[in-house]
Amino acid sequence: MGPPSCACCGYPFEFAVREGALCAACMKRPPPYSSARSALLYDDASRSLVLAFKHADRTRYADAFGHWLARAGAEFLPQADLLVPVPLHPWRLLRRRYNQSLLLAWGLARLTGCPVVPDMLVRRRNTISQGRLSRRARERNVRSAFKVRVGRKPILQGKTVILIDDVLTTGATVEACARALRAGGAAEVHVLTLARVVRPQAG
Ligand SMILES: [Zn+2]
Image (cartoon, rainbow, N blue to C red; front, side, top):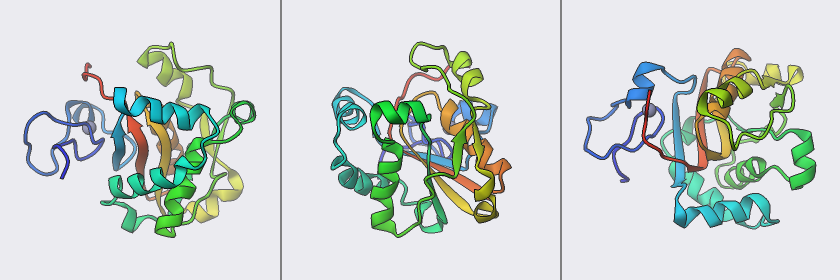
């Protein structure tokens, strides 16, 4: 067992808590997903690994990462109906050559047999680079950035969806995607990411 963490977002506590305990952020503002789990903390040890996967042509990493994701998502993967990657904007897809979230989803699908729907979500517009924005600005930027593809709505109805991304930073992107999936008919959304940035929680 790993360290104790928030039952919803997976935020690690530094002390033992009863099962099902929520962190301050989730109590204050419940996220649109049921739970979020990550295989790795995004720290000095994992950063180079994640960046290599993200920026170099290291598609072979996806298999190893698939195993890590399967373990991190063990609580909810047995109930999963569909795996949905966070989509890249087409312009970024061109530049980076592939969507690493989709590669992760495929890596996981090979282990679990759960189907991947690569084009379930679409970006509404080009969101500007998130790197230098404050949390509030990021949220504004991505809040309405995603929608369910109209033609995909029928297969989404009543389904339990696992939303896949590479790195969870503020959570604004996965929250926007989860909200779009719920609005589009998903019964439940769980978030599974390769790595997660943990920073002190503040208001
Ligand atoms: Zn939480």
